Figure 1: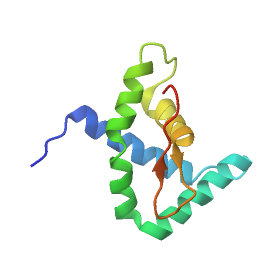
Figure 2: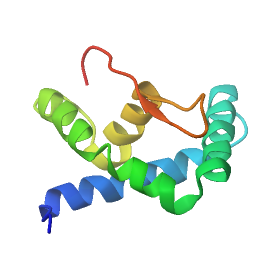
Figure 3: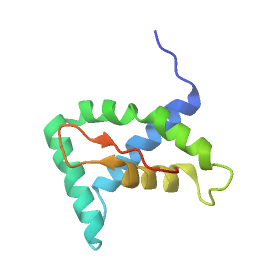
Length: 106
């Protein structure tokens, strides 16, 4: 049986919360609309349970990215870093396979 630290469980929860929030973005920002629609298509394609497991799979990558910037990041991890990381590092173009895009920095 795999055991996860409390910090990793919290990171996974933050990731899931961020995906849900980004899916429900207000319709006033064209970029947010496109992202929300792409996330919604992924929910439809994969289903909530499968997408949740996919998102949880990003935990180690997000924690590694956070370790690189944590000392200099002026905002908070859960409400700022995690959503920004998803926006910058997840390709939602294939609704059956949201993929991590490796980019420089966190």
